[in-house]
Image (cartoon, rainbow, N blue to C red):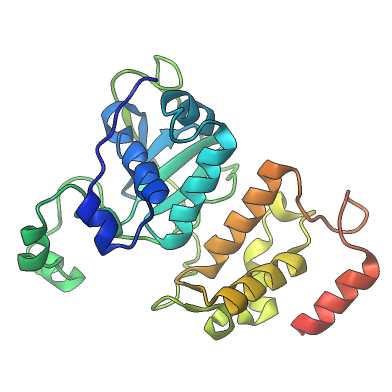
Length: 264
């Protein structure tokens, strides 16, 4: 056990977070104090490891898989975004966390500025903290992982900037059911999974997985592609990835044809 954390109870109540969810967010809120950071397209991302977090917060996580499960749940809810550079994981806090541990009268009296107001007042200094739906959820061979000296988790943050090409934006104007998103069209959905990392992934299975999950539970998301990638990453972690026929354990050809017919 290395770090302690403080829970913002009012934040949890306002955002309807469970004790586990707000505790996980509080644990990750310690990253700015000790974790290595990188800037991607002007946004700050904090390096972390599920194993490291489980080691430092054993009462909360116990094992690395529980840490991964908890943080991906918060990603699905829109409080954080996750990405990987090579094999190293990073997390970014969205503007839903902007009022964490701030006096709530500030929340009521000072509403967030709009993009237009920010432009009129001149550009903000420092890294951006507004939500962004840049989906860096796959390993990008064009990004060089510039590890700082001092090991994976140095005692002092090491800020460094890397340049990446902005990917296509996959966010909807507002959170919606999957069936109401533009990716309910299977061809549009599949077009977002053409990277080499997904070459042997049975995309049609995950299309139906997120569609059924949304329909059955009434789940609304702003970025359904990011959600689908979280589904895929979760199955990768558990060794249950659904692969294309002939590339490993997966669905039968008849099942795949049925799902494709249903998607069409």
